[in-house]
Image (tube, rainbow, N blue to C red):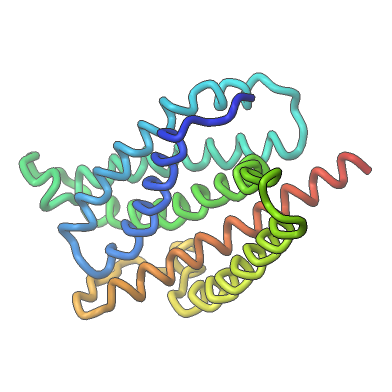
Length: 227
C-alpha cells in the first residue's frame, strides 16, 4: 500500500478533532454542536473518498482476526452514522431548522444519544486498529537522526499516550460514559455553564484511551496469529 497523501492525513486529523468537538459541545452549546455535526459528516465523506482504495483492499484481503475486527468496527460505525443522520433531521433546530417538523422527537433523541456515544467509540476503535500504519510516519527522518534519538522519541510518545490514557480512564468514569453506551441515560439537558475546554480535554483523552486499547488488541491478535 502506498503512503497516504498529506491531504488524506490532514482530513483524518480534522475528522478526529471534529469527533471530539461534537461530543464536547453536545451538552454545552446546541447550535455549535449541530453545525459541527454537519462539518463532521462532510469530513467523513471526504475521508471515505480519499481512502476508498484502502477500504477496497480491506474488504478483498485475506480474512483473519484483525481484518474481521477492522471490518466489524467500520460496519458498526456506518450503522451509527446512518442512525445519527436520520435522528438529527428530526431533532435539528438550527442546521436543519428550515425543514418541516418531523414526528418522533423522543425516540430520535434516544437513538441520537446512544449512537453518538457508540459511534465515537467505534470511530476511535477504528483509529486504534490503524496505529500500525500510522507508526510509519514516526520513522520519517530516522536516517538523519543521531543514534538513539528516534528510540527515545518513541518511548516519550508512549509515555505521553499512557498519561493521556490514564486521564481518559478517569474521564470515562467521571462523565458516566458507560451509562450512555448502555442507554441508561434517556435524556440529557444542555449544561451551558460547563467548560468547553475541559470537555474537549476529557473527550480527547477518552478517544486516546479507546485508540490505545484497540491498538494493543490488534498487536495481541497479530502475536497470536504468528505464534
